[in-house]
Structure formats: C-alpha cells, structure tokens
Amino acid sequence: MENFYARIFDLACKGWGKTHPNPMVGAMIVEDDEVVAEGYHECAGSPHAEVIAFSNLGRTPREGASIFVSLEPCSTFGRTPPCTNAIIQSGIKKVMVCCLDPNPEHSGRGLEILKNHGIEVTLAPESVQARFTRLNFIFNHQIKSGTPLVALKIAETSNGMVAEKAGHPSPITEAEARIDMMNWRRLFPAICVGAGTVLADNPSLTARIGRETWCPVRLVVDSRLSTLAPGVSPRKLYFDQFTDHTFILTTTSLTDGQCIQRAEELGVKLVEVAADKDGRMLPTSLRTVLNKLELNSVYCEGGPSLAQSLLVADEIDYLFRYRSPKFFDSPDALAAPDLDQYELREPVQTILGEDRLTHGFL
Ligand SMILES: NC(=O)c1ccc[n+]([C@@H]2O[C@H](COP(=O)([O-])OP(=O)(O)OC[C@H]3O[C@@H](n4cnc5c(N)ncnc54)[C@H](OP(=O)(O)O)[C@@H]3O)[C@@H](O)[C@H]2O)c1
Image (cartoon, rainbow, N blue to C red):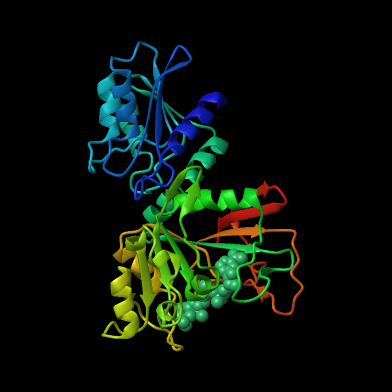
C-alpha cells in the first residue's frame, strides 16, 4: 500500500506551483494490484485528476477495480462538475482517499455521497493523511482563513546573521539548500522582497530549476521608490524578460515624478499602499495587495527589515528558516530577526548538505 501512496503523492506533485488557487491532486486507477491509469490536476480550469484518470483508462474499470485519490473528491459544482459524479458514473466500487477536503463545510461530504451510492470508501491512515494534507498547505490556509498565506524565508548563519556586511550580497547556504529554495520559490505564485535587498543583491527572483526558468509575480516593497532613483543602475527585475511580472509597492503618491516616469518607461507596475507612521508600507498592505492581484500566497525573502516588520505585525503565517554552520563575526554583519522566540507548529526539518531547513506554521 505504501508504494501506491508514494506513487500518487508524486503524481499530485506534478502540479507543483501550477494549480493555484486549486490544490495539487492526483488520481490512480488500480486493477489487480496494478496501476492501469493515472491523472493529475495540471492547472486551474483544467479537468480534475479523477476525470483525467478515467479518460486515460478509456474503458469501463474492471470489476474489483479501485481508484486512489490524493484528496477527497469534490462534491460541488465549480468550474467543472463534481468528481463524485464521475466516480459514481464510472461504476467503480472502491475509493481510497488520502486526505479530507480542508473546507469544513465540505469535508467528509464527498465520502458520504460515495458511500450512499454503495461505494466502499477507505480513508488512509492518519500519518498518510497528514502528509497529503501538508502538501496543499497554501490551498488549505486560503480555504480555512479566507486570506492569502504569507511565508517568510530567512537564511542565517549559526550566529544569526543574514549578511556579512549590510548592503552586500553574502552567500549563506550552499548548493543543496539553494536548490531547495528554488523549489519552494517554484511553489508560490508570488515572491516579495524589500528595497534594501533589491539594492544590495540585485536579485532576479526567478525559480531556476534544471533548464526551466520560471518567474512568479515579483513584489518589491519600496516606499520611496529608491530602487528607481537616478544614479541607481537598473535592477535586473526591472528590465529582464519578466519585467511585466514586477510590481513595486510604494507609499509614494502616484503623481508625476522622475521615478514614476522611469517605472513607466521600464514597464514596471506601481501599486500605492497604505503607509505606517514612518512612511513605510503598512505590513497589512501586503495581504491587501495579494488579494487585489488574486494571489493566494507569497514567498517573502526578506530582507531582515521587512521580515522584522511583518513578524512584529503578526503578518507571517509560515516560516522557512535555513541555518548554515557559517559564522559571521564582523561588526558590520547584519542580524536576522530573532527567530528563536517563535515556536513553529507542525515543524519539518530537512538536512541539506551542511545546512538545515526548519519550516512550519507560525
Ligand atoms: N540571508 C537572507 O535570508 C537575506 C535575505 C534578503 C536580504 N538579505 C540581505 O539583507 C540586506 C538588506 O537588508 P535590508 O533590511 O535593508 O533589506 P529589506 O528588508 O529587503 O529592505 C528594507 C527596506 O524595505 C523598505 N520597506 C518598506 N516598507 C517597509 C516596512 N514596513 N518595514 C521594513 N522595511 C520596509 C524600506 O525602504 P524604504 O523606506 O525606502 O521603502 C527598508 O529600508 C542585504 O545585505 C541582503 O544581502 C539577506
């Protein structure tokens, strides 16, 4: 059974970062202990995994066949008809469900509908359910809270530093951890950094995995438009092939001005956000912008000032904390926010070469 769970998990993961605002889902038809057809949800608006699996089978399932679904089949009409209908119509009599629908209003309903049609429904053991539920933590958060998920990533040295010298890029982690970060970047529809990071690191903020370069919506929090100031050489994310993915969140009024003209020339979009008492972005504005742009989550890569503001304002839902064995002892080193004070819920630890990642809910 574990082999089937592992296979359907990988199947669902084929939709990694591509299904927003929908969850990643896989479905697999099994006859005589053999997988005879499979399907996964590719992107919002495309057919659901169960429907694809039946279509790939291309015939009526044999007697005794079962269908594995990574998530409880939907029981309501959305952009597509409910998957419970597709299962009932297929004539299949056994359904193995890896985890429940996170929506408290629907959870368990799909299972009940199937049972009422004489279908044997088996819910996976709790440890398996936990793994499959966690896979869709972004979707689950949005469904349960009605707000986008704000995740923060910080990479720090063993003595809690994020840069050897403020204003300069400093590699903290090694290759394995950097590959891992790219993978998480790929999961989120948006990425966010503060002006300090754009000025210091000149990042592209794309996810580079193998030969694929993918660009999320890039949000730069820059109250005074200092990243566009005269004398600042154009930052990569303002003139690369993905410039139309870049938004600057600013508290500067969007009336005529040199920086605003420069943004227009570059094709970068400006979004005016509410200011705090110091004229910086009010931390709650980040979620307002995500809602406005219909984004269900963001991977915020700091830097430390923006991270601290979001943490203090209780605007972070999920933390990715990378720790390297390096030690920056220079008096110019820049400290990360004190993350030890936060206890993560459902923490997951991963060893990545010399580095470690701990991630979980705040
Ligand atoms: N190790 C890591 O994980 C990591 C990640 C990123 C960056 N870094 C390093 O961090 C350094 C940059 O640090 P930083 O703190 O200057 O970067 P930052 O947090 O990216 O940017 C800070 C700037 O964001 C703007 N901002 C707008 N609203 C804000 C708010 N509510 N709260 C805080 N800031 C707000 C402010 O500029 P305005 O007032 O002009 O808007 C502020 O100066 C670089 O050396 C970089 O290499 C390390």
